[in-house]
Length: 312
Image (tube, rainbow, N blue to C red; front, side):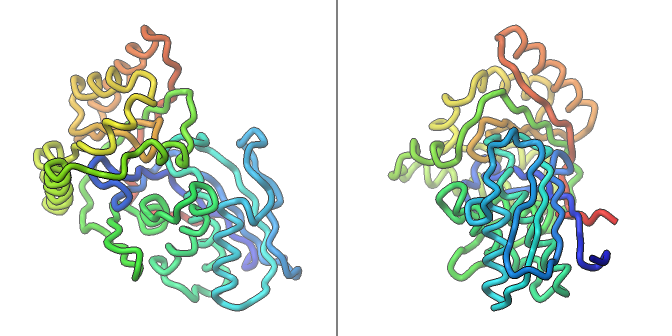
């Protein structure tokens, strides 16, 4: 096997929803993320050879794994029976609300597309990765896989037809991710959501989303902070997360621009204008959680505007 038949990539964690953008907004971060190795073979099937760092929880069956399903979808679209082997090294927690399944799906199709000579643009890869999300969460949502592939902040304008738009911003925000030691499956987090939304809340949420997007484009920190408020989903999901109110309040007291649930939780993200404020917030949150006997992991990172990275 030659070097041109093998590729290893870093596929980043992502924050979906971003407060008021339920199912239509997400952004990528620089850390954590997964390492995905994709190899072309002389066989005619797709195999997942190994998964490290998952404690044996993820299926090796490619028809049940987000990476395998996404690769199969891409090959079927091309109508080829190319053999593909996939190796995954998980470097982010499962069921964390940080796009763990999305990282595998996005990284695998990105690498395979490169090895096949890039028959698809990066944006055209999103629907294939969405199929991986479907097998894991029950819905083919794009607010994790789109920013993982495209980098930065991405909005999902439409699923039919697919329309994924990068928000034109390079605002240098720092992001603190707090992951309580509990697991929330996306499927279960969706089941508790109410189907009906009062008109008043819908109007408020729509205004917040519009303000957030404009704030990102203008790089207006104050507008971002005023707008990144979720009045519909967060109140329903917050009770599932140990210490949520304490963590959120401490983040704001430490200078956070905004704070909300990452994806379906339990991870919580908060944004900062400088690195020092983020570091102080992380230490204070650790102290608060220690007093309340809540075990957490913290990731101090920045917005990832490049998306998936190839390891040379």
